[in-house]
Amino acid sequence: MKKIILVTGATAGIGKATALHLHAAGHQVIATGRNEKALAELKAAGLQAIALDVTSQASIDAAKLEVDRLSSGHGLDVLVNNAGYGLFGPVEELSDADVRAQFDTNVFGLLAVTRAFVPAMRKRGSGRVINVSSVGGRMVFPLGGVYHATKFALEALTTALRMELHQFGIRVSVIEPGYIKTEFTSTTMSLLRKYVRDDSPYAAALQVGASAEEGLAGLAVGPESVARAIEHAATSRWPRARYVAPFYNAAGPWLMRLLPTWLTDWAFRRISGLNAAPRLVAPSSTEGAIASRAT
Ligand SMILES: NC(=O)c1ccc[n+]([C@@H]2O[C@H](COP(=O)([O-])OP(=O)(O)OC[C@H]3O[C@@H](n4cnc5c(N)ncnc54)[C@H](OP(=O)(O)O)[C@@H]3O)[C@@H](O)[C@H]2O)c1
Image (cartoon, rainbow, N blue to C red; front, side, top):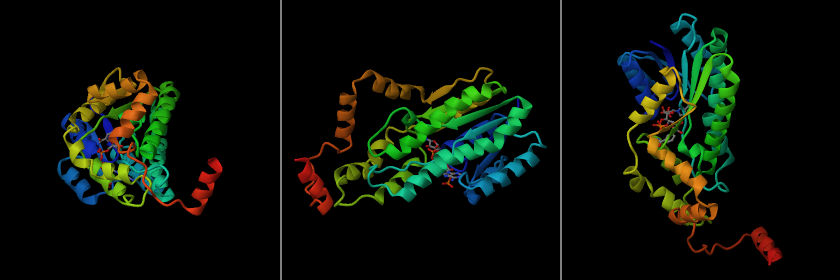
């Protein structure tokens, strides 16, 4: 059955692939995003396309009015919360502004968009909410603490929403992609490079992180499997609570539960350059005072 489906962050990567896939399957797809050129291209491909910056309440309000118009007051059958990006860097060193911006998009943006579109679903007694998390919503890589924190938060919100909205006929699923070939890595790398400094106490790990793009490229697969998982969550009579895409990435969180923490910590430290010999950075007077108190 044809559904009215809105996808956030549909101007690139997983969101774009999903919007095009669902459109090809015959659904009324409302592709949303910030990039006007990409939105125009989606419109030219036959999709409906509207501006939506998930961090702006004014933009969300305007998009809601437009959705009411495009759906003749029906509202959405399916909301796909996909917009997001990855801020990577040492937890100690990331700026407050960057951390807040990361949470604004990946968590507060998703929450605001969900709150805008769920009421119409609840009143109708039907609907689907599909949140794009990550396998990184259940396991953590060094330098990814803040990004993973947003995805762990998203997992918690999704789990609560799944139980709270069930009574109203609304089904809620989480999608956990593995490493997917999109613009994600280049955005992450350009944010990370800001923090690469020779005098950082994390310099070795930052160097490993900043030069990881080429090595990682071979591991990434196209976004089709994620688009298919989202289609299943949107249209199946029995949508699953969780989809890992591609499926074999489920091995990651599974191994993390199975193996002892000291072993997984050691392995991640080793591949991330965190086992390197400590750098001889002259301590600041405060650090020096703390160190001498500790000995
Ligand atoms: N690629 C992976 O390996 C991977 C793995 C696990 C999870 N994920 C998740 O998958 C989702 C999609 O990422 P992707 O891999 O497709 O990356 P991508 O190619 O960089 O696409 C991200 C999309 O989100 C949009 N976006 C960012 N901030 C936004 C905002 N404030 N308002 C509206 N749209 C915004 C971007 O639009 P602009 O072009 O305007 O920035 C872009 O369309 C993210 O939630 C990400 O965390 C990705």
